[in-house]
Image 1 (tube, helix red, strand yellow):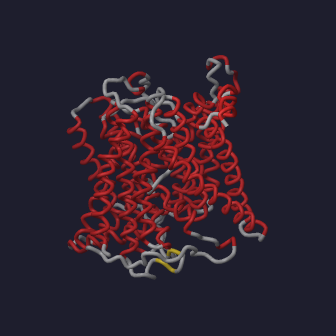
Image 2 (cartoon, one colour):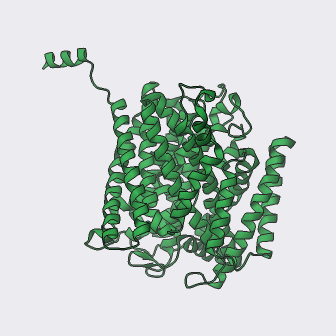
Image 3 (cartoon, helix red, strand yellow):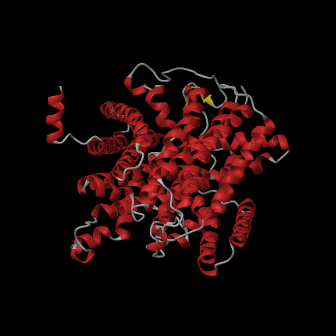
Amino acid sequence: MNGMILIIIAIVLLGGAYVFYGGFLAKKWGIDPRAKTPAEIYKDGVDYVPADRGVVFGHQFASIAGAGPINGPIQAAVFGWVPVFLWCIFGGIFFGAVQDFGAMYASVRNKGQGLGSIVEKYLGKAGKKLFCIFCWLFCILVIAAFADVVAGTWNSVTSSTVNSEQAAANGSTATTSIIFIAFAVLLGFILQKAKLHKWVNTGIAIVLLVVAIVLGLLAPLLGVGMDAWRIIIFLYIAIACVVPVWALLQPRDYLNSYLLVAMIMAAVIGIFVANPDINLPAFTSFNMGGSSLQSMNTLFPFMFVTVACGAISGFHSLVASGTASKQIKNERDMKPVSYGAMIVESLLAVISLIVVASFADGVVLDGATLKMTPPTIFSLGVANFLQTLHLPHTAVFTLINLAISAFALTSLDSVARVGRLSWQEFWEDSDKPAQERGSAYKVLHHKWFATVVTIIPGWALCRLGYQNVWPLFGSGNQLLAVLALLSCAVFFRRTKRMYIASVIPAILMTCVTFSALVIKILQLGTAITQGNNISGNALQLVFAVLITGLGISIVVQCAKALIPPLSREKAVKKIKRR
């Protein structure tokens, strides 16, 4: 098997699914291009801001991709390339894309509200409270994992894990990323105030992007380590949480989307030109760990949890219903923005798998352990492919590294805002006007207070490193996907639309996620009793227990709504028929 055949299969299957299955869902659920969207009705210049399809796609794709479709498949490759490939393709088509499309559709049809408010409408206030606190806890896990990934791609201090080439590339990535942010603010004012033609805006965006990259390559920020970058990153996302979306998130995502799509196209071209062999085994073992609980690393459920964003990610539903739905200008845009973005992400996951599989067995994998970080493996692999075209290896490595950092940073500022909104939504009471909710509500609901209480726990977990947080993030992420699919199913059932497309993936993912969480809780408990990293493992254990308990409660409520008890009259008739 070689990489070119795999990428062709992936493009055909994913592209066909977008046209046929995505179109089937759009027809069954009902898209009304004449309907006014929440972005137009509730336009406030902060969260509700109508935008062109390309801009919203850029926000959705750049936000959901993050580091997940690169980190996940590369780490899961220890089980062999076949199971990972199959899950990326069919999981993306029937699980992830359905969830993303459903969450956005439900939100747009419910005034652009987040899933928490939709849960309240169909399951009551208790369901909403549980869902909002779960989302808030999950956002903290995402912040912790992705902040550490971004800091790692900016770290320019050489060490045992960072060589000189990587340190230089990281320094250029840091410079370009900071310039990106400044240019994004400038572009935001141009998009909002100048009202230029979209092709003019596109030209300006590309010019700003190229200038930022050139300046980054010419003036890398060297000698800045992980701890310093973590502080700077958390200060940035605190500000990004509260500024209007048109001033930073929309234009930054718009800029990044060009970089990210260019990276994917470059990787695909590299695969076609280099046509790398698949050097990893098709399948290795069902259990890549040891016989003890502490070292357990089985294909079920951990391969599904580890791949995460490459097939299905609960985080996507928060972006689709929390920020992107408030920017949709026309209902026709929902399918390409949600289902389409997930299909592209699954393609990126397949590219990541081909990259890691192109290395000789043992070069990047040592048993069940990676010798390099997934972003480094991806950047190195794509640079190797494009070297076939006589492109400079170091420059390509730097540009790919920059794109990965852009993925993760975009997810960071989006998830921080979603976490802030989830916290605020938790304290809202639809039965009371805002002016009657008291002074405590005004403090707890304030956007800066909500931002601080979301970011501080994320900071504490971030210091553990993404390797320690990722398994818990993956489990929580998949559980959120279950809750999102069930919530959408309840909405579709109550509004008399087809809901089976959401229910079947939800049932299968319930088995995966609760299995992974129970094993993770037992592993953390064992590690604590053995005295291993007590404070860090204890913090993770608290999060694991909380999200498991909240998840069970919400699943039960959704199940009751989907399978309502028989009325007394129907029950009597059923007994008589027997």
